[in-house]
Length: 68
Image (tube, one colour):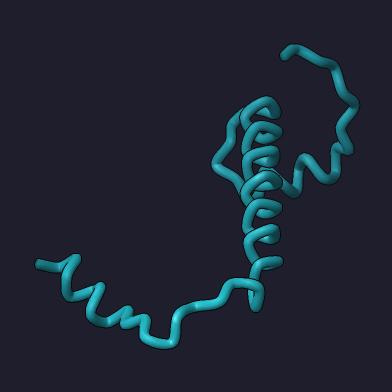
């Protein structure tokens, strides 16, 4: 989708310091991906304490099965 936006020059300059992006387009795309990843992770953290794990669940045995 093509769009025109006005970006804060100071924020863009600082963002370039932390990114390997070479264009503003790449920088904005990376920022959008990071934003989505952050919020997906945050949504997963909302599940903490809401999932009941069986008392007899043996994660060590499962790891052994995956290695073999």
